[in-house]
Amino acid sequence: MTICIVSPHLDDAVLSCGIKIQRARADGRRVVIANIFSEGTNSDTRQAEEINVAREIGAEAFFLNELDAPDRDENFETSQQIFFGSMDDVSDDFIEHVKSRLVAFFKDHNVDTAYFPLGAGNHIDHRIAHAAGRLMIDIDVRYYEDRPYILWPGILQSRMNTLKLKTDVEPASKDDMRETLGHFHYHTKLPKGAFGEENLKLYLKGLDKPDSYDASANKIEELTAANHEVEKTYKALAHYNSQMDFIFPDFETFKRDSLAHEHHRTGQNAYIERHWQIKDLS
Image (cartoon, rainbow, N blue to C red):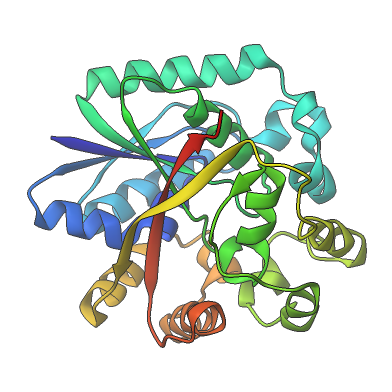
């Protein structure tokens, strides 16, 4: 049996599902990573890194070689466009194209369970991948929390609100978001300008509850990592030489930011991955 981690970019799968990959491999399951937007600026270097990361953690990396957003579409060139550009600027045909490519990939690799991003953090490519996941039928679809974005209190709640998903996610306030801006390494590095004053206003707006809900999001997996699993995850991530300086430049930063997130969220001093299922309310 095979599980697939659907990764918008060349780092998202192991950043978000490093513990899940290890647990699946320990249970004797094959794990494949379908990197969707794996072509574009510096893609040769990043694909080589991805192969090394996947090998380190026990997965297999594959590349769909769709273009990264800034290389693909002039509507998504600036940080504000990438993180707050409208999905209306993405054609239904393109989302269907991504979905069809993934369906073919799942068939080729006998995938029975696929993990898609929730799209927390709002990166347009993550939102496109999420939209493709919502169209899937005849396969067990689950959704992961996008790291590092979800480390910031309020980001997950904001995404659930934007999607009009009824959920029991731990609440965060606008003051929580304001007060913790800059507390996580990726805020200062990734990407330039993404967390400036204008974008902060848009992130805060996402905490406003919707008038109604279209679907529910329910936690179906909660994986509390052992120390050796956290260490192995970072050992794999360290192969991302071109990226990790912007996200987690060393193990201590990785551990500090991850534990700070969980402590704020639940009060636990732990590294936890959570996965969700989405069901329509109609």
